[in-house]
Length: 523
Image (cartoon, rainbow, N blue to C red):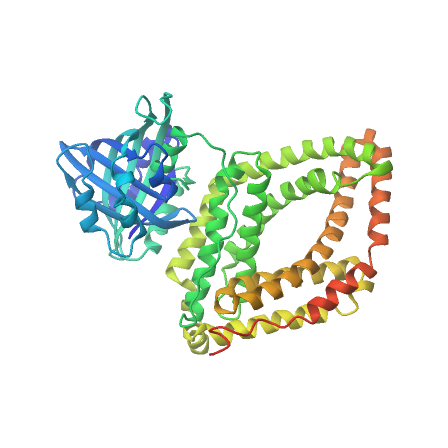
């Protein structure tokens, strides 16, 4: 398994990296400078890409080396992928040699055994890179290969559609050769102090495929977690945190592009899931205050854009009747504000502050830094099997929600908001632990919880909308008549649906049993 951290830098900042004191202090042996030419191969319909695999043949120093990468994940800039490599006599891949190297249980092995795949492989894009390599040894004894790649990705006459395209490359790769993954983030944070860096989410192969077949960035939703009842509490926390960070980092490019509404939404969801998970385990491990503050800053940057998106694209868009004309005028102004907030969110995601936040969070996770301040009792609980902890967590969340939701139809907006937050946390928790329970019971419970959340959610949207419309009135006084009418219309909607509509979903949820069957139920 290859474990590397990818960071992007502007070409003009490369000299600052080369002169960085950390490289001079920790580099072992001579610095290598290599000229590399990579040929990426795939079928005309890109079957390897569709199966999340990349196959290349690289010419370097007169030698040809083939490399297959497949599977793995990207979390906060940390790339973990299976990799198989070996020398070949020329620019053509040797699939027989690959077949012998790949483990039997790897899905990519069966894929490459298909005649339709083997016979159709052809070059799809190339890279020409000047690579500078430092072999680093940290004071703790960890060995890291630091690589600076500068060059170009090209898809030309051999590409799928024959179109000529190119994309510059300027990036750093820190690959762990021996030691702890936390050391990658230590090195990256030291470099960041002097060199502006951004987290790199896409590999060269992914960027090359986007040249071959241009496609819009797609928002990344949370992926289901596969937990095992034999896992410890700490192992489950790391799995949950990694899953949340995959969702966060998977949407950073869409947010950085400055326009995609869904990427902002999903990145914000990933961040909320992460903060909920940190709260769920806070009795055993505590995030440092500095990182907690930075996650709050990031949540605020995304939240502003999301709130304006909801107002412009949902709340106002749903109004009809006499309010429709006024809502249309306000929607245009709200969309303009949303675009401004998207620009600010993009600036946040491409800033050194965001990079430092994600690197610091990953360093904390990889080093399991909480253990340094844990009591003996906390350490025992962290090492205990997950089942009792998960069950206690779900029960605690349910009790909190039922307590806050007592007399829900008559609650004032602030108290109702607290119920909505409790419902959200309860849902995140059951979704985190879902694989430990009977799937049918989980679906039943989540369905009733989701219906309750929807009822609470549209009311919250109206309350948020009222605040944004008041702000809009200060920014654009010429819209005061329309704003006043729409605020009144929304207030009437909220008042008309404040009570009775909540009774049925609340009762149905309160009667729903917690999931109990499955590996947890047997523990």
